[in-house]
Structure formats: structure tokens, C-alpha cells
Image (cartoon, rainbow, N blue to C red):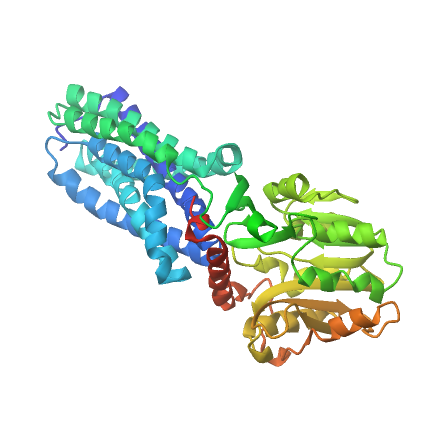
Length: 517
């Protein structure tokens, strides 16, 4: 029998503590991806790492919490929650050195070890709350089942509410760092309130003092946590003009006057680059796509899936008078394109997930440009047979689908490259592949797909343009690829080396610090 029986007020307070700590577990797990994403991207590996670490932490917490509950005589839940709060507050402060230290481990191991070091301690302590609460709420042996069921139900309900509140309300308004620090502070207050109750009602003589000391330590760490990780100008002369966290990534606009460049990045991906002096795009693959209206005259309407810095839409309008609809999932990217790169919509400018939005668009389009990637990886659901069939149905009879895909060439035998070629070829009769920088293994590849042959010798092209384009024709062996479907799409796994290469490129330009907030 539990000799520290809770009264009605104490039981309600215990349930509230369980509810709040259950919510905290999910908040930390979800925010963990946003803390790691600027450095390691938003791939499945990052999500798998956070989910695995959370499960490991809860398993440890349940085991350790159960043993502690059976043995603790003078301490209670307040000490556990205070320790969890303190460790939560240290996460923003520790993120930078931990991420930099794990960089040599590579994408998969680095993401997992970072998650383990940063989030395992606080999540383990939060996992200890459940068993301890069951012990406190059980007055008779025959009531163990009811008590444990109630505690875990309330904890799970807290996790649900925490997930919805964070995803639907908090995160769009408050940054991940600020949310994490606020969570730690709230847990400190909860621990202090519990400590007072435990000492007065449960006669736990060692409740208040150690908890109060941890609360003081947490309050002292708050200023350091708040100020940790802010981006700074680098030694190589770059300047961060804008940085904004969205639901999809950490979006930065970076200026480097020594190279006459302005960049748009999202997490570990560079999604736009232009001259500072004249605003012209520095991405060569866009010059290839820019010749398409010369190959197929009388284009009047286009769709761009993945806005980037907005250069393609601007060029199509200025050079050919083409009205272009755009779909961009990230509002931070769309705003940066307007504010820093001069993008002005000529058609509908839609902010939303392309897979959903294209179901509500009406063709026909003469040109569809598919240019989606972020965080070092492609949104795989936009490169499946099902998505490509939707896009094909939106094209005019002479329309062209242009897909930009970043990968290694490997003499045309790269499995990821071949898989994209095979999947596009499933839906389109004619397919041509172009390489952005001939002679380079790591490259932008542009797939041109249509129902009719594309004549590279079109008289609409100048002789120099035709020669420049033909020099970039690439051969890809589709037989070595996989068919990418909604049911089976291993593209992220096939593109692991590409994601790591992207990180190396950004580090080469700006240094490792640019990937750490």
C-alpha cells in the first residue's frame, strides 16, 4: 500500500503534471527535427533518428523511473521534472557544438548521434514521470491496473494536444528555439509547484531544496540559451540579409559581395543564386530551360512547381511574354523571392504542397517546370508515376515537362538518375536529358519530356545556342533504374550521397557555421 495517499487536489495536480510532461515529449521530438534540419536536412534519416531516440529515451525512462519510484524515500516527481527542464533549456546552447562535432560522421550517423546527445537526457527524464506517477496514484494493489491505465491515457492525450498545438498554432508563430526555451521554463515552474506540494502534503523532506537549486540553475542558463546560435557574418565576407524559420526549413538570403552573388538557401540546400550587380540567375540549368520556348514556338502559359528565387518565371515573362503560375510550399521562400530577388507574379502565385495544389489547377500548360528540393533532398512524393501522370494531363498537345534533378552522373549509370528517367519515361513518349556542366560528375540534370519529339535543330535557335544545347545532351541508362511509385519510392536512400555533397558545397562556400543556428 502507498503510505503517501493523494487527496483529490493532489491527484488532479498529478494528472496535470502527467498531461504536461506527455505534451513536452512530443514537443521536444518535433522541435528536434527543426534543430537538426539546418545542418543535416529534413530527410527520412533525420526523422528516423529523432523517432528512434525518443523511443529509446522512453524505454529507459520507464525502466529507470519504475526502479526509482520503488526506492525513493525523500524525493519525488518535482526533482525529475526539474532535471528534465534544466536539460531542455541546455539544448539550444548545446546544439551548435554537438552538430559541429558530429559533422565528420556523415549524414546518417551524424543525425542519429546528434539526436542522441541532444535529446536523449531530457526525454529519458520525462519518460520517468509515468512510472513514478503510477506509484503515487496507487493506494491499493488491486488498483494498479486502473491507475496505470489512467496515467498512460492522460500522458498520451497530452502528447496529442502538444503535437496539435505546436504544429497548428505555436510553430507558425514562434521559432523552435524560443518554443524549446519556453517549454523548459514552464517545466521549471511545474517542478517548483510540485516540490512545494510534495514537502507539505507528502512529507518529502528533500523535495524543495534540490528542486529550487535546479530552478535557479535553469533561470541562469536562460539568457545563454536565448542568445545561442544566432547567425553571424563569416570570415569570407558573406552577410546574412534575412533568415526565417518556417514549417519546412530555415530560409536564408546570403550576400557575398566579393563574388557578386546573392544566394537563397533552405536548410542545407541552395535554391537560388544571382548576380548582385544585375540580378541575373547564376544557375546554368535555368539557361537550358530558358531555351524551350524557342524550340516550341507560341508558348503562352507555364507552370513552375518549386519557385526558388523566382528567376525562371521572370525570364519566361520578360523574354517571351509567357504567363506563369507558380506553386511553392514554403511561404518563407516565396516572400524572399519577392523581397530580395525581384520576383513578380505574372499568373497565380500559390503557396502550398504541389501534390495537393495541382489537383486544383486547370491546364492546359505549354510548359511545366518541375524544380523541387529542399534540405538537401527531393520531396520524393513529387517524383512518382502518379504525380507525373497528373502533370502530363495538364500539358497541351505540344507541351513540355522540364524536370530538374540534382545527382551524380557516374557515366549515366547512377541508380537514382536512372530511376527518375525510367519513371518519367513511363508517362511520356519522348524523353531527352541534358547536363548543366559537361565534364562534372555532380550536376543538375534536366529531363525534357513530351508527347512529340523535341527538335534541337529548330531554326528558332541561334547557331551558338543550338551548339551550346547539343553539347549538354546526356545519356542515361533507364534499365538500371527503379520505377518510383507512391507505394515504393527509395529515392531518399538513393540520394544520400547527393545530400552529403550539397552540405559540402555550402560548407565550402560559407564554412560549417552557416549550417548551425
